[in-house]
Image (tube, rainbow, N blue to C red; front, side, top):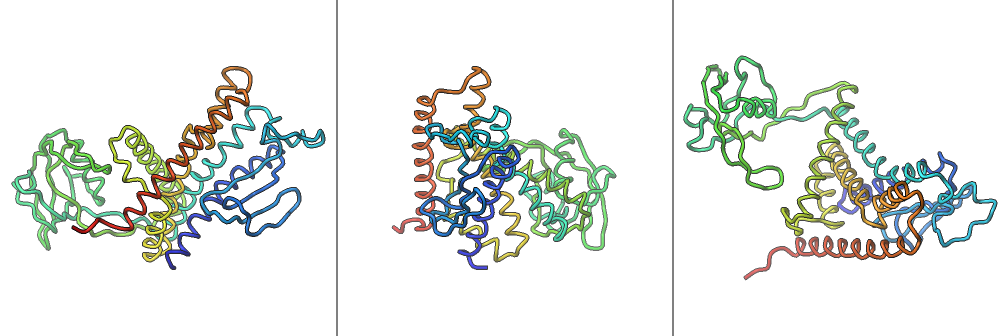
Length: 357
């Protein structure tokens, strides 16, 4: 699959899922939907089905659902008031707006469940890749290629299990059962607090013995129930990491230069497509969670901004005035445009690469 085709598939599906969430919940509550568009105007193709004009538009940076009565400045004929979004109670309006991000999270769960069901779950074994010089593991004579079979007589098969048991030791001596070729032996090692790098590239302190994982992995076959549970937990973990990343970006603990946009998405989509459908679907799941979180940010013009207005309406007992909403949306639009400029700038800089002396 080419990079261009992979990008179209990834972005198209994620936009469709997001807008489908708004569309279906709007229909559920009896709100009329005038337009369902993939992409932003001008429209490229369209087909009218019932009350809804389904469109494929030129600018592939998003999509939208236009509902009856969504624009507060628009006059609504009396016969359309029963289908008007703005005439619905607060609860249904919140559900309709929140449905887009929620469908993106649901998509991640379903996508990962299917990958785990049909392709299995890859995981790293307890084979040691590298030994840090001077570490407890080095002092105990462990070597790259050794496989840890047990920790204090407790069998371990996955690297994350091994790492967790070491962290939980509280710097107390632990007995490791090691396999080296045909030989099996035990070593008592006392973990100590050492400096390492977390997933955000930050230096952190952790209880370790100074070993790193090898690049060898195996695939475990799981039944659909286990796959579903893993799909939920993996989606939750992606959401957690993405949320922390956003906080660190805002607080400048992570440089803004690390942000990527459509060009970066296209590059990664192409790379994952070359590795196989399972890798591409997994990438889509990660991107879908990112899209959900982006849209739930409390920025006017985004779903999160609308939810903030609804929260203020619930607290005040009346809607935010149209003047204040339009002022906030103007600011929100500037923030979004600035963010788009930043990610495109970062993408172009990465594409050009470092300047030559």
